[in-house]
Image (cartoon, rainbow over all chains, first blue to last red; front, top):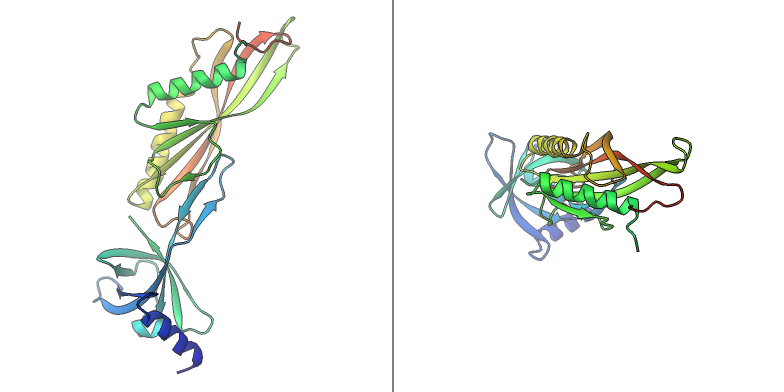
Length: 105
Length: 150
């Protein structure tokens, strides 16, 4: 295990940072994983009016937790009993984790 | 202090929107961005924009074209519903204003000039939400050099 893998595993395992979740590609079975959630909020470029402010929901998941699956739009993440659809996914340069942009209904 | 023509127009437009769309929150001259996560939506923001003056149309009078915009914000349960809600709200605003003439001396008909629409990207908003900016103009006539209500 590289130093980066160890660091990533430690961060996700830390109960102050990581939380339990489940990942799946419907209709496949849920796979347990741990994710680090963030909710960045920012002003959005408007159309010339007053503009808007909104927040996105991002989950970082360890690639090893979901084995051979490469997350893509339409996959699902179950967090605290709520299913979130994956809208976008981006792998880190080392291939150790995925940054998932999630939708909320 | 007499009421400026521009303020009279914007007040009349606000009253019209409130009367025609009573269930939609309306704000005038708001400066802060709308928080689409936490604020009650749908919501409209009415703002006065540019105005043009023509002193050649009629001796002793100035003919104004008063610009104003109506921004609309929606949030929905799905991307498609957000798109549809934007279309419905925009159409309702146009139906309320385009071709309408306020019952106020000196103010003429409101005309639709165009609109822009935007659904927020998923990396901007986890909730399906979006906005439009509809642009309108209104004719107004005042005595030369006196842009106030009679």
